[in-house]
Amino acid sequence: MKNDNIYNLIAEKIPEMSKSHKKIASFILNNTNVVPFLNVATLAKKAGVSEATVVRFASFLGYSGYPELQSRMQNSIQKQLTTTERLKMTTDVYDDRDQWIYDIFYGDVENIKSTIEKLDIEKFHQAVGLLQNADRIYIAANRSAASLGIFLQYYLNIILGHAEMVRSIENLSEQLYNLNEKDVVIGISFPRYTNSTIQTITFAKERGSKTICITDSLLSPLIPYADVALTATSQMPTFIDSFTAPLSLINALVVCIGKGRMKEAESRLEKIEAAWDRFGVFHKNDFAE
Image 1: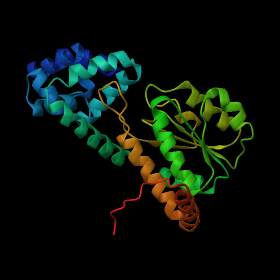
Image 2: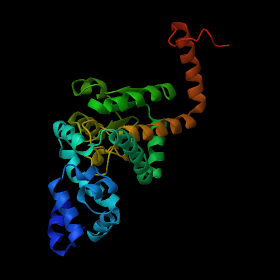
Image 3: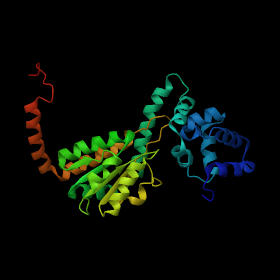
Image 4: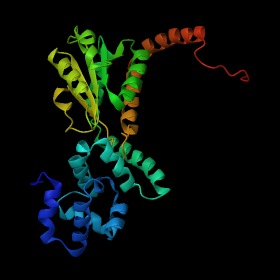
């Protein structure tokens, strides 16, 4: 597109628009924080036009369809919204008493579909190879993304035995002072991106370690410092992050790494299972036959 600002583009095109397209344009420009997260049906209803008209509106602007237009609008505003603004947006978008509950599930399904469509399978296999052959693996994931990091670290430790979380920027020097080219550092961050994760993966790059980032798009500030970048869609008009698709991506990584290290993983799991039994980690069903 010639105009990088989608909202400026819409405003410039208004004189050329039909009456129904002007209705859509007016609604978008008056609700810039909400519209990027509306599906076709909801936008059509709120703008007072048909769904087909919304699709034609996207084509009129030069996009392949509404998903591309929606993606451009989301990229324009999502990274700049504060948590308070996202909380208000939740109320604006999910305004139906019951339907909004289902819409959240549908949103996660769409995020997974989008992640599958955008998956770079070659980079995915590169990431698997780097992790399988790393001497040590460090994971930088902070704030809400820490949940993804902890999950990944737990299973990488079971399979490979040498993964750890970089807990805070204060501990960065103690944990990573000995980084070298045989180590891999994974940075996980989504809007609003945490500076500590960016600093960690930047430091790793400077030390010659291989770096992998798991983030939302190629516009992420982690991208310039990643040898391998994997993206997963996390868009949802709420004050929380949607990590359903990123978690699915991490699941796929863990399974592929495990398949390539099956014998080592089995041996490690046998020892871990024995320790679990020794300390009674898991509840045993007394009624099991």
